[in-house]
Length: 155
Image 1: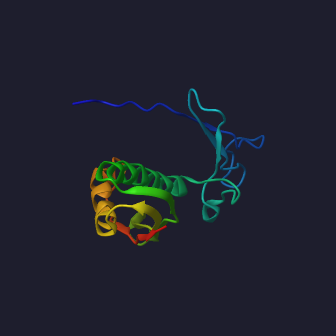
Image 2: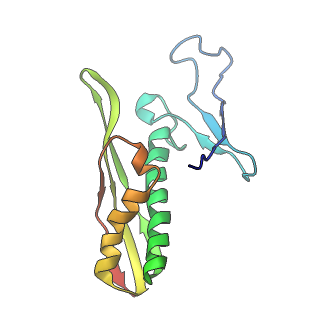
């Protein structure tokens, strides 16, 4: 068994002078950085939780991680299967519910990849989305369903 280690740094940058002296006294701004990365990513909380709309929030990063991991596995599997992809883009959506007796939680994520292929079996290209989902490390780490609404077109 191989163990992979991921080390990042999260730094809160939202002290407006009085720290967390009150719920409205501080900004939710923070930044993500890691060794050997070119620049930090500016983050905040979701605007519904007093965050900055112009910055990425943890919920968006989770959806992005699922989409990115899926895409990387899908590209790998298509390459192995002789399917030549010319373009891949995704507009995923995550759904989180809040309220009731449970804390907020994601209920599902829908990936909507638009794939342009120039060679290979289109039905195989469609089926490889399920295989990619089964191999994706991030998808295997969440407790909510992942759906796929893929569009595959020959170019």
